[in-house]
Each structure stands twice: as C-alpha cells, then as structure tokens.
Length: 109
Ligand SMILES: [Zn+2]
Image (cartoon, rainbow, N blue to C red; front, side, top):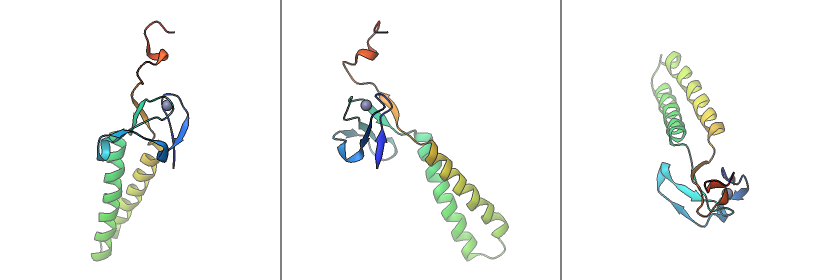
C-alpha cells in the first residue's frame, strides 16, 4: 500500500513510516521524506465505518426477516455507495508541517 504525502507530494510505502502517533481513527503518520505529520479525515473515516456496518446490519436483517427487502435492499445499495465514495475521497491530510521547513517560515515566499 502506497501513500502520498500532502506536504511534499512524494509517495512512500506504509512500511517506510518509522514514526506514528495516536490510535484508531485519529492515527497520524510521519512522512519519511519531509517529516510532516499526516492523518486521515476523521469525518470520512466515520462515514466509511457507518456505511460499512449499516450495510452489514441491513444485509443481516434482510437475510433473517421476510418482507423487508424493499427497505434493506436500498439501504445496502446506499451503504455500498457511501463506503465507495468515502474510500475514493479518503486521502492523507497535512496535520502538522515539519519543523525547520523553509516553506512554512514567514517571509519565505
Ligand atoms: Zn512529505
């Protein structure tokens, strides 16, 4: 799995990340090229999780109960769309710019 840095735009492997902080949805990783802290959009991660579990619950309910297919089928389709969209939109965001970076110094531009 390859990630792209939101600060220096270089791509790197998740295995090359030697520093990370936080847990679960708020986990952040440090770019091995420029040392910027990167993280995922929490709202998208939450939407993805809700979409995934919503779809699973709808599928289970539709499997065990009769006459609910008119409700559960659209719910499953909606869940698949939510998970797909949040997956496409989910990319790393810059959480904290690296220290001693000339581009963040005042008056550098
Ligand atoms: Zn970087």
